[in-house]
Length: 418
Image (cartoon, rainbow, N blue to C red):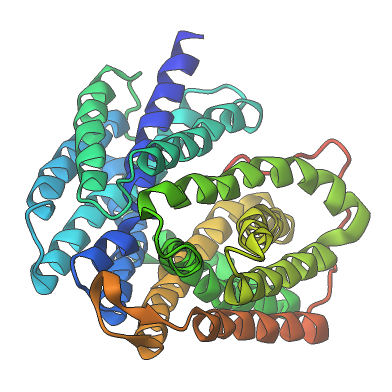
């Protein structure tokens, strides 16, 4: 029980750090007069870090150092970088500092999972309980940011910095998690070379391509959801204080919906099978972007709430179900490499493309810069909706579900998203 409490606190703090800045970063960058292209490039630093993170964890941390010590050092170094970042408004300097920070932060996502599962006798049963604390942390910190109207303030980084220091020190009190790998670790092992055999299966190749492509719309949502909804309320209520719109609080409902739809996955999987679960998810992606694009906060506020609440089905039914599908296709021998390959391609390559493309799309449909800029959000959101339509058509035409039926006792995978 003591270990479970320690791990829960660790997971909670790590996701407070992430949730404090990630969803609000674009709003803050707009406030300091960065344009859409610059904002997209800054979000891309996180994806670049996600590409390099497996190499840091797999080739260094897992071989030479105890995981909890690496977690502590990375958070303390990250806090120092955040301190410098809070005093930076020059784009070039901000980009490089953000990249350095993300290179310290991204490995912590894998390290917290690794530390947790290596302290458990039954990770498949115990880890979800620990991991859900991350989702609760994200919901909690975004609500605090919303209540205090800090979404466009540098305070988002002060929150992350303070909690990074706390976790950095706390990590050294965690149960010892020594290195597990001896001998050389190759580049091929880290990128999941053995899992390449799965591409001989046409349906898995289609799923892989679709996963990368759908991360482009996902990146649109993470980057531009907050500013878009904020503008919707500003346009509907121009005389009202923007601090009273509580956009961050509304957006936290998306994470809450993840918990609900996560619980539905085992039932949906048995009833519909993987193909139709993924199709439902893609239809939800299209619907959410159309809702955001045509919503009016004064006469059709329900459309904004609908787009937010669809986050659970969009994310869980595609990405979490995709984890299950990958496990079933890969089998026990290469499933870890297969999951790593999918993560590298989606959160790394897919979201990198999405961040850059999304930034330049927003810039294309925006007049002016800074808080007074005017963006045609309908046109912006039609782009990811169109990409989701293409992925849907690809799936309907080319994907075949040839996996076995999921056993009744099998639950959703342990690695729940944010």
